Image (cartoon, rainbow, N blue to C red; front, top):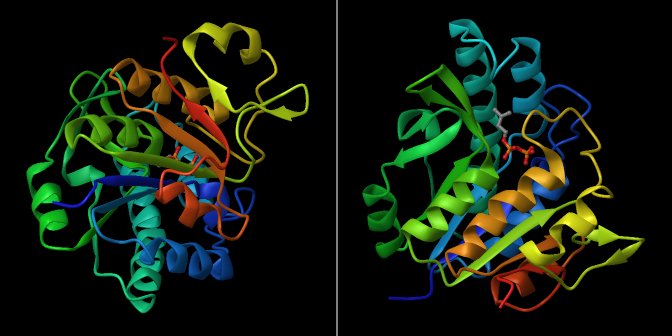
Length: 252
Ligand code: IPE
């Protein structure tokens, strides 16, 4: 069995987060080409970008249970997923769409379960499951938002990932203008005040939300790397486990 690699591609890389359902087609082609170059053992989770955050905000999700908002937001992120899946397929990988609305249950905004068995089987057969930030049912609140980062953290543990690479539109975790090579819980309090907000509409917490998910993962002994996926070549290196941004790890 080859190494399991979990790749998150942020919605800010794939879309213009300020314009409704606005895909960056050339970026989608480029990042999927880089990902397809190491598709063995690969699971992709992409963000929702403006396909998800803008409709979610319009309908007051996740605070409100709104069937129409649920449907419209899901349908919109599925459209982005279709663009990513078809670009991966053109790049020579064998991608398959996996929609969290149908396989994730939340409880109080946190993932309680993901049906991971089919995902493992896909990977064993050389397919690349492509999940995404989505809306999902919540056992306490009716519905909620499942961020790609939360999915990455859950899947990395469930599938015992060897590599976890989180692509964004910045060079990593930046403190006083410098990219930190490593972040742990020990230096989190020092940097949280200076963490940048997302540059567009965002209902899932920007860089701070991302770091908190990845620190949970680090507590389970799995190191991840936050890197800039908009710079050509970094995604390919990150999937090989090379340091191209900020590592999120344990304090010891
Ligand atoms: C958010 O997903 C999902 C919805 C708003 C429906 P993400 O939090 O993973 O998306 P990005 O990466 O910030 O765009």
